[in-house]
Image (cartoon, rainbow, N blue to C red; front, top):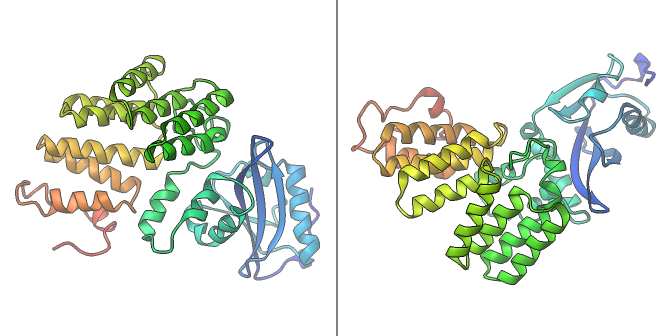
Length: 345
């Protein structure tokens, strides 16, 4: 237990504890950092391969910062739902703990992520190292949301946390998708093979293998996607891709069936992929002239990811400002209006 004296406290300063992800000997690891606010000085760091910091490790982590500063802060800010939550309960009550959502602290953490990415591989730092200055903020936010938190439910719907499921093959998956998009089939498939050697023929690996072939061989793509769904019928991405394929062929009702199955199986915390599916199912409903379902789907997509510019454009052009849509349906609710930057007249 940390021993605290009242006179050891600073009346103004706060400490921020945040987590970055990386790889250590081919294992997914966490790097915890402690930053003093408002100056931004990094006071302590710790690496763990297991879930978060144990109470003993957390105590050492904080003591390093205390030894450096000579006092405790007024409060310690942490990310909501971080694995260290249980360890934080062991701290003395004098040290005020304030959980905040990651989005509220993103501006403070972003420079550290970008710098961290120059030395260590991680999905989040990879994003920051490739972010361009001329990219719109809403596009950056959407890209951030596409990378799951290490301790969020895995998007493959395995029931495991992302860190212990698909995260170990993030590099291989991104490599396969990038090579396939650039027309380099053999290199893309080599990344898929590397993923299989690491985790086996999981639902995500089989689905990604099918996606690679979609760039080169439609027949093999269909065969592999059906094979994936035969083995893993509830895999959300495979169902989503199947929906896209049916929509491409004009088989809209079948597309809706598979989109709905993807929605049912994506983790409820996976706002990015659920937004993606709702946007696409809204488009199919619109093509069927089912404006009510289209509007509801697009609005759900917007609530999931308010930064999605495409969804806003769909709603504006196809629903709210479309004279073909019944007047009652063209009304924008106050909650939706708040998500738009300017008032629609």
